[in-house]
Structures are given as C-alpha cells and as structure tokens.
Length: 186
Image 1 (tube, rainbow, N blue to C red):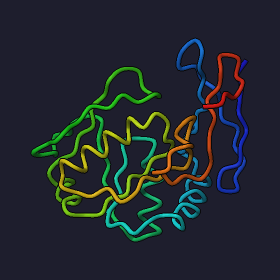
Image 2 (cartoon, helix red, strand yellow; image 1 turned 30 degrees about the vertical axis):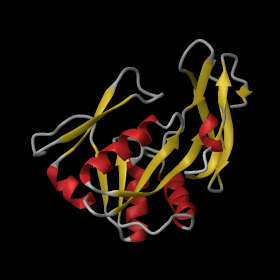
Image 3 (cartoon, rainbow, N blue to C red; image 1 turned 120 degrees about the vertical axis):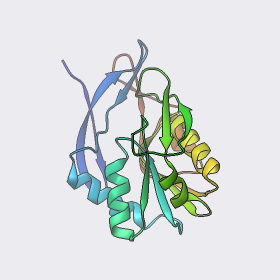
Image 4 (tube, helix red, strand yellow; image 1 turned 90 degrees about the vertical axis):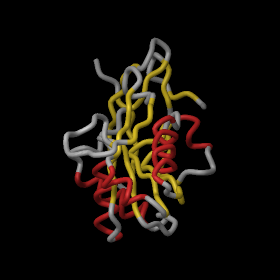
C-alpha cells in the first residue's frame, strides 16, 4: 500500500507519494512535470523572493517547468543543463552530478550557445527540490566554467537538512522519512 505525505505548497494542497531511497530512508516525490497549477502558483510566489538576475539555469528535467514559468513571468531567459549531449550542441562543457533521486552518477552538459547566454551574467539556479545539494553544486560548477556569476539558488521545496541552509530561497520545507514513513528531523 502506497504511503503519502500531504502538504500545502503555494496555497495548493498535494499528497506526495513516499518512495524508498534505501532501506532506512524514504522521500516524498514532488513531481511538477504536468502539474500546471502548482507550477504557476509556486513560480508566482517565488518570484517575489528572488534577487535580481539576468538568466536562469536548471537541470533537466523536473526543474524545467519552474524555470520556464519563472522565465515567462520575469521576462528573463533560461538555460537547461542536459543529461546527455545532443547532436546540435557544439563545444560541450560537462560536469558530474550524483542526485538523491537518480541511481548512479550522471553528467550535465551545456553547449556553446548556452555557455554564451551565461557568460558574464548574474545567474539564478532554479529547481523543484533542493535536497543533498549535489545538483546545485554541479550547476554552480557549470556556471563557473561558463564565466557566469551565481546570484541565487531557488527551489519550491527544501528537503531534509537543506531547509537549514542559509543560501537558498524556497517555499516550504520537506522532511525526509524513515523506513516506516515517519518524518525524521534532519
């Protein structure tokens, strides 16, 4: 039987299904993909908390709806770090990322066109959930390789210990859960 964690995000109530990441820890899966209502509400609420920025960056794939909506309502462009190189990408730069929600090491890629969009710009990282910070670190490295300046880090939810970080902007904390589905303090 599936267990859920119910919370309110940007005024919208959602039941997030719990999934194990190992035998002792479960996470509540917050999936913005396809949820237009939560994406638009979260972006509108986040917009008022953001520092000035020139361009957004997010990692493929779950942060894309948020970055798109933030770009739409702020009039700023966004860049997506891809999880695989594409034939149209030239002079690719890459870095490794080890995310809590993906098994195994991955890579993030940017092509020359996106590198030029970031060079010399104030860049805001946008993501659905910040948890271990590994995706943030990878995006920060890519932006640095492009010659951009990180001016902020924003997410809809801060999971576990990430909610105690002073360097991120987020709407709601999201606990981690023990093997029995009980919230645990981070």
